[in-house]
Each structure stands twice: as C-alpha cells, then as structure tokens.
Image (cartoon, rainbow, N blue to C red; front, side, top):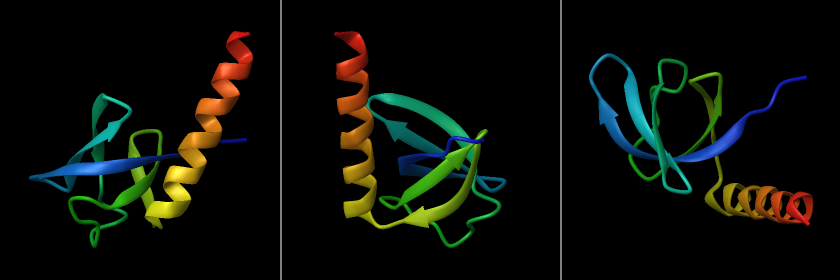
Length: 75
C-alpha cells in the first residue's frame, strides 16, 4: 500500500524540481513525471515525486478529510 498526498505547487525550480506547500510545510520534489504542472496546481506527491495533477476541489476535499482523521486520532 502507498500513500500519495495532494500538495500545492508554489515554485518551479531548475532540473524538473519544484517546491510544494502542505499546510505550511514546504518540500522540494521532482516534477519530472508531471512536466505540465504549473505554479498553483495541486499535484499528488509520493516519495518526493509528483505523480499526477489533481483538481483543486478534490485536493481540498482530500486534505480536509486528512485533517478530520488527524483530529479524531488526537482525541
């Protein structure tokens, strides 16, 4: 089983690299598999690689669900 997380792309960098933001956490990832991605897009990230783009509404819905799960786990 693998987990891929939607993140928002905030900066394109040289060498098929990009910076993404996930709730204030910023991480450099590879966008070699998604060269059409642009700043502002949501991408699915798995093990430091963007593996696809995702609709913004779907990304927000997924992130909300992750937040709800984390809140329940903390109780």
